[in-house]
Image 1 (cartoon, rainbow, N blue to C red):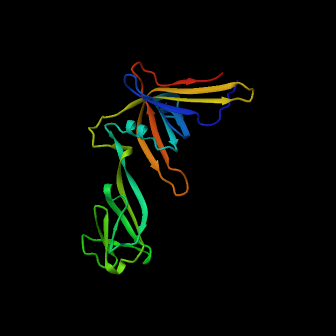
Image 2: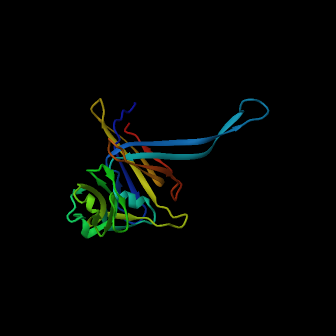
Image 3: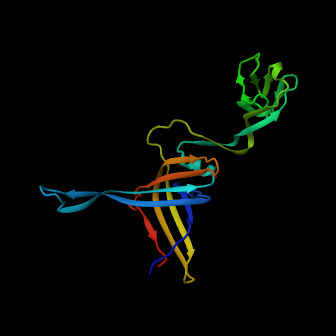
Length: 246
């Protein structure tokens, strides 16, 4: 009996180790799993093969998520470290200089300048070390200084600052070649079939590696994170188990 399925179901990745914490890929948008083999043909002096055999096999897949999952990112990036707190971008904070200076609201934890736009002159200003001329500015520790001619203009300032208690910072340093993290992968899809019964299917990959992690930021859509994965044999040679509901 054929089995209809609908939607993506759930995808969970479990790192290797004792009592690991599974990581569920949140807001799973798409997932595909491909099993392929190299075909080896025996050809003599005639045009077509007289025999054909399977060569090396490959099981690969791709999953797309609409959720920025810090725990999953840290687990994939072998050798990365995580700490509580993160950098936060502040976009287009607007103010008019007071005696030619603006102290941004995040000055106490200011990290770096990310541009100043003069809304009156309708142009980005040029940063200099000190003594700014017309159309220039200087900045130190979140205090922006402007030329007196620009001192009455509404400025739009973008910068970043630290947030000690919110978010997580994931930092990856250069690792020795060969460093990698293996996961087990389970994909389940439960769909209420036309006959009223529960159609369940699943795929279990006991050992996968993730060679690619991508971030796609879109102008008029949600950010999309995608992972590519490849299956390897586990300690006893298992590659994949496929579960069907009927």
